[in-house]
Image 1 (tube, rainbow, N blue to C red):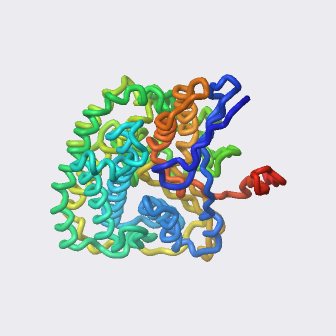
Image 2: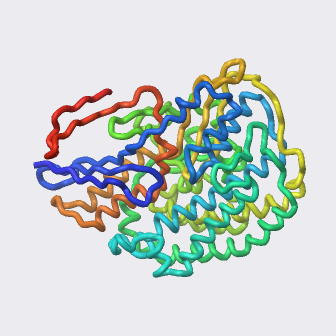
Image 3: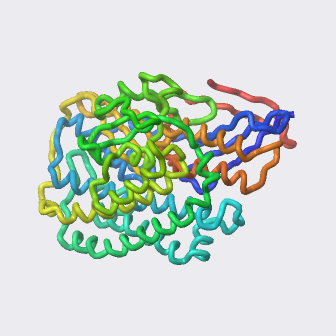
Length: 474
């Protein structure tokens, strides 16, 4: 008889999801899926709101990466306003986004992934957590906490709040940076450099132990997408999108926010509330691609900061072309943390960083606008339509987790087929299947936005668990 293994919930993720593994009569894995089971309705309940409220509203989608939503949303609003923000406001936004990236990557690596990496996939699940890491590796545990605190403290200094700051608004930011705050951030940079150096060194010492996982953690040819500057250097706020194939050849370049809807489509599968993004000219699923730290380092030709540049050169030596195993998302996050710290220092030393002109004003000059930015997990796109009075008529959000969704599902299936044999499995084996998803660091709260009518299944069970009735809406 066939059998289904269910991992519910998937642990150490941001949001709610589960994994199902279907076995055939011989106990071999026939199929496997990663299900996003929560539903969020931000696109729908934003309708009717004034467009200028959108950044603050959209930030509430997520408590981990609210800044990315603030920035992408503000850029969509600025397209509606037809306004260019002051240069100092652009620098301050960049610093805010980098600070968020640092704290989010620290959360992903140290709190969610390092229990597997530093303690082992088979370690006692009761101790396989950040507290277990802190007990076994106190120096690394402290480094992880400190790096997250570093990013959050910068967000708080700039935006007055660590979570959901209202500082980013259409047209720029609400207030300039003070000299005292600039100097305070400069004083905490040395500790941040020391902590990320410690983390990179520790990761490189243990990475080779995980070659079996590297081989099967979503390790397959795919396309990759990320923002880049005109010189091919890594970018988080401006630039345009580049899509490459598994050999590194450019499929399409220079995709701006206004062109995004022409290039990217979204498919729906019955087992998840998160959509599946794909490149339209290639169709679905052939046009699926990966985003996030792995994609950014695969696409970037340079980092633009000296220490991160050395790490990028070393990272690219992992493969002759793009690095394909999603296990290496962990390594890529650490490189990006180092880049973020360096770039924050560069911004603070910019001679115009204390300029008081940080906001432009305008009204509705277009009825449609789109904005894109790099969130920690990958490309984030906000697309809005308004009426002549600026009332929101329609919104669509394309989230990084949706763009990685196909790869996550392929990776879960690849790992399950590798580890589950003859219908036999251990807790450690199931943890490895979960760890495939953790490598992508999906944000399920961000990704699951109802758009139109969502499928719904309701089952009525008797007291002994028998299904009495079932209603399905497709």
